[in-house]
Length: 168
Image (cartoon, rainbow, N blue to C red; front, side, top):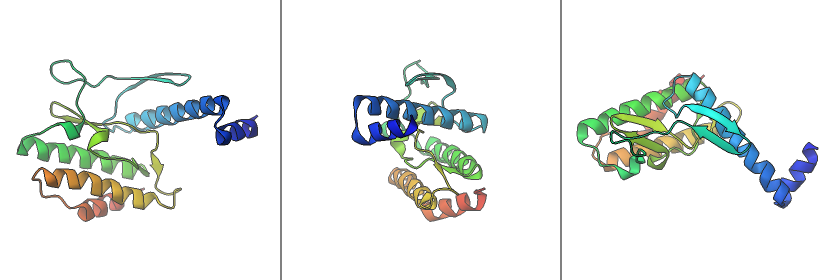
């Protein structure tokens, strides 16, 4: 049956798309559960039902859905605090042997004074993936570039070095 599913996915049949959607949802569910359990700032995973993933709604002080970090203009103190929170989250990921793999200001929610990582189905195992450390460096480059453009003096090589030191 699995070979049938693999062929259907490769041929992009309706069944293949359905199987792929289920695998994608399961991957994100597994990532959310692992990271939530490890204490990383991610939405609380509530339930998985087929391809539907129910998780905590991250809201701002007014109760509206929290904006992506890229949509915000934090003052210098909050910007530094956001970066410290992000460094802590990335350190927790690296210590667990993981890397987000697509981390950017578009995959971070800013809710008041809190940063939350989202969009996790592509989480990468640093040890198993030969390009794991390349993805880690790219994540460092993406986030440091955004914070530098807002006036915070951060260095992606320094962050990368810190994360590698905590990996595994």
